[in-house]
Length: 419
Image (cartoon, rainbow, N blue to C red; front, side, top):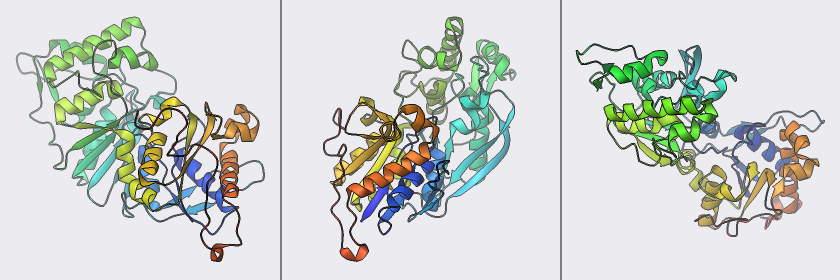
């Protein structure tokens, strides 16, 4: 029996690769002869880079448990046909973090010349350690990572937007690639994070003459955010408060982004322009990037459509499964692909609104218990799902027909996948 295990992360408790490894180890404890493929998923935000790298190796390793049930099992699987076996994870030391302190950047270079960059690695909110900087956080380190990818020969860029600490409209990223603000006399202005607003007001032109050329294969931005740059649904109003901005700061950030749009042009009303503090807008207007739904693009990078089409069962999951899970998120994309291929799927969740979903909270007896030992309860969930498929004598008994209880891709709990 061929099983594809493609969960998203269980946010705040366990990442997607470890979740896939634990589910796989649990399944194998009951049905050790089945063929399993681990393809940890992401929606283009945090975890995208790890998912691509994990799929390329074909191995997911789960975390250990403190209960005596071992899940330190390597989940061997064929490398993903999309990412391929030749993916290189490249470290970029000492790029600028969101507060200017040096951090380690990373990107993945695929065999076809595509470089995958995750904005949160160098410019993510967690890097601030709770010391939020709503006005001065920058995306410069992501730009430095992109520059390193270009230096390494990247012919196409895929940039996952999500988890950003800043609302700089992507200017820090563009500045790292050579963009400059100039006054009426042509002088370069101090555009550092602390002086960005003054520089924008004084600038008469955003000079792109020294901006590095985008790679020949183009630049794709992954996000499930559809917000515009400005207004009540814009980057400052909706996401600024999550980054520490109060009402006065939101007003300042709105003026910053509006001024950037005056200088840079483009379409600030485009869906996705407000992603990652306006970085979606900055890269689209300044570098010709295009926005794509994150989960579908990540699935293609991983080779998930082909893997699902050849499977007998697909297992996915996330921390909380509700009506929004099927609307553009990673789990919804896995369910959609399985449905299109006519392959049954099941969802494992930390908690769920739908009673038919297998939840770690139910297995553990409480949400708190499940959060304390997510790998252990995912291992148990994998074993439960395998047991529902039956336990014939072994592989020589022939294929088993598996119809585990839970939401099937054809009849998902909640709204239709196409809604």
